[in-house]
Amino acid sequence: MYDLSSVRADFPILSREVYKRPLVYLDNAATTQKPRCVVEAIAEEYYSVNANVHRGVHFLSQQATDLHEAARERVRSFLNARSSAEIVFTRGTTESLNLVAFSYGEAFLREGDEVVLTVMEHHSNIVPWQLLRERKGIRLRVVPMNDAGELDLEAYRNLLNERTRLVCCAHVSNVLGTVNPVREMAAMAHACGAHFLVDGAQSVPHFPVDVQSLDCDFLVFSGHKVYGPTGIGVLYGREELLEQMPPYQGGGEMIARVSFERTTFERLPFKFEAGTPDYVGTHALARALDYVSDLGLDAIQCHERELTRYAMEQMALLPGMQLYGTAREKDAVVAFNLEGIHPLDLGTLLDRLGIAIRTGHHCAQPLMERCGVEGMARASFALYTTRAEVDAFVAGLDRVRKMF
Ligand code: 7TS
Image (cartoon, rainbow, N blue to C red; front, side, top):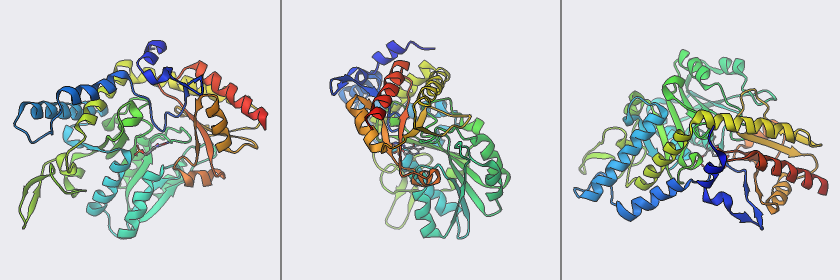
């Protein structure tokens, strides 16, 4: 296990105060804080390397290109992809999902084909498929869950049929924290000839994710949730699928040759990267991946799982506490409501105590409907969260509870 106090010293923001109280930041599923090395990577590149990539003959352009492509290789090794041609840089999970919906949709989906989603998807893994449904006339099927927040695999098996082309599933729910059995689910999809996409936004920051071992066809994640900068994300796609998919956007970088009659496209992964990429963001993301790898994703997982278990145990002692998501396999997220208190009031009052949580529908309105609520409060943990912070949070909840 790593040393928490020295880890916390790597994140300057964690020692700031809000309302004259020490910050207790428990909104890590929305975005994580950045270690000094990530911010320094950004500053270093702008101060001493900055030049546009893949086009200059000059020294700086070459150096910036090398850093950018080294970052791609870093992501490849982090996910254990076979080739860096399978790593496409995007703005984030949302853009990666839209890219797949648009481009895979063009290449592989016809009217009447079925795409399977789950009831716990984030809106960004629902809405692009609905937009595609309007364009293509595909059908969306939804995997239900039980009251503990575990997907119903029997129902899933029954949804799969010869019209199923693609299954899209969150690896970890951003609300319930459920770790879905995506390896098993991918095998079931493949057995009926369908492809499988993993939304890794909430898994990649928390435990080792290996695309070959999961045997998924696509995996997406966001840099900002894994201690990297905002505005950079990743689409992993199996090479033979990416090869068959048309470009998502047109412009510079993604072409081989352009004439007014005909344009040919660059090889993978550049075919999907129109325009100047966020080459500073990719370099800083690689630094963030180095940071979590150096601590060890197994150690991070062990720390966060223990904190989650402790938090749920302490929270359950409070009268009127309703916890959502009690799956056996559960990660660093705890969603809840306190009887008689609107989650927004709860969040606002905790904020005055310096405790940052998220409240509302968490971009998962179908899941809220399944749980029969308008909204929930949510605390989410990171590699730097301490037991003392969980104690402060639970004490804060108790204080708010007594005000009502
Ligand atoms: N998928 C999942 C599972 C997510 O948790 C999120 C963001 C996204 C996709 C979208 O990621 P983005 O980086 O493109 O925005 N989830 C959250 C959240 O739980 N609170 O704020 C954002």
